[in-house]
Length: 186
Image (cartoon, rainbow, N blue to C red; front, side):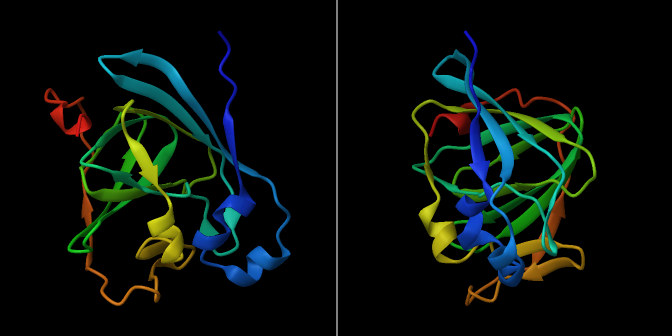
């Protein structure tokens, strides 16, 4: 069975792009491709996302980003390229990023929103495991015009739409798949 990708277009990221002036003039084009449900096992879904390199004005290409409804986590593995996984806790008590390359695993804890950035000139290919019960909340991020930080050619820039922005920390990826996957089940 051939799985057709869900294509995420630039216009779908209008509310979360940092460089609004650039966006006004930009042509709508595909940004990334999501192949959902390639495998299913133990009530988990396996997806692959491909993010070609691109600049969104001053900002590096990223996924739209979302929180999960409920207490679901998610697990990513970088299959090719390198990415930056930006996470922020729903109550904004914490924000951190993980730089990951091919073979690295990145755990998204429950109650953390996340977006994935391709800061390179190569294709970023990532796989994820998530509960089939998990639903995504994009509206909260859209309402705030993105995450509390944007990653640009000038580095990290705070999103002024947030009243409270935690200090951004860096954490390391894991080199191995976690043995305990309970965080995926909510």
